[in-house]
Image: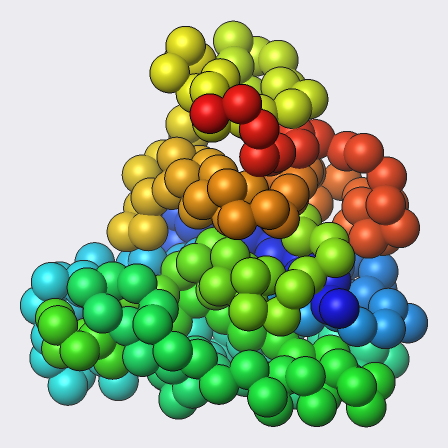
Length: 247
Ligand code: IP8
């Protein structure tokens, strides 16, 4: 059983810039991740992924330059995050989705999870990220951190799934909704900050409701607040619980 944490690119990078890290927030995250056995970390791509993807017409347009440059850019963010995690004593190892999964029509159909399990079993922290990926139908596309989380949560029977964003959870009319089930969705006027190439809050909720349908609940919380990442990994009920239920 593993715990899966995703921290969004809107926290770790400045999305109004181009490949702009936020070193203080990267360090703040890293300082909370020492000493959690069984943890897998996925981080968003932020301005290291969405800006180059848009520039090269991804997803949709498949060029060598677009794939290579976008991958190298998100791998650079991953390298900076690994550096901070190493400094914090969290024993991280990088895992690049481009090299270990394949998609069909934008959805992961196969991913090699054995290396992740071995890393976790030996007390290391695997660190994945939103990436470009090969696709058996489209040639190539983008795999979001959110999709990685839901795939891994099902494939590796996660006991805890938490997605850290820069807002307090799923917001409706300025209020955080404590619990969200599929049946609640149609009546809600959800708050959305920005649409990026992988779909933002709406995309996240869709992924997590599908996961809840498969019996795995998850939580969306504010990972920018100091200490919240530790609290959520310790099992505190922060933000919004995305739950399987009535639908
Ligand atoms: O930030 C997107 O990943 P996300 C990955 O987790 C790219 O949605 C390359 C834009």
